[in-house]
Image (tube, one colour):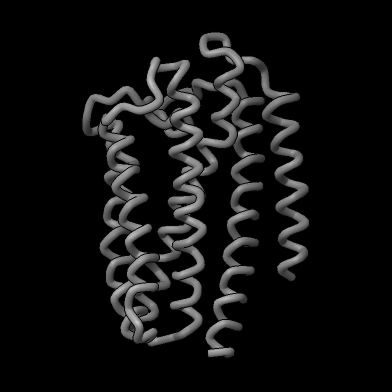
Length: 214
């Protein structure tokens, strides 16, 4: 089953690249640099998804002490950190020609950085506590607390004046993007979501084997 998901993810990623670089038109204002949006925006989506799964799995573990829930939270946090790092990297590449700088401490970028550091701390905490069960409990608490930063990241562009633009897909009223660009984004959303499922399933399987070996 995991191999099937991996195959679907690979096919969807190929389709997403074709849509992003072969089908979607060149953006009038920003030019070809805008095409990094097809990596940047789906990466943000997967990071949100991953940390939401960490939240639910952490609550489940604290309530029911299910080892599977702890493994799911652990695996999802690792994948979430990976995609948050990708979000920051692609955002910097996009920001240099658009804003004239690789980095600026505006509300969105700062809140994303805090989110990244919090979940890095989540993973470090697991490695620092020798007692595995106690480490899982501590990590579950941190996984719940860290999730409260996700709304701050998402709504920061509405609550404060920032260089970062608001989400184009969620603007009220008529759509501001051509349908072909929206289609390219949706294909990449699907591709990155499948990739997330594949990574988490593989990592959770490895964590289970590690626990059995221990």
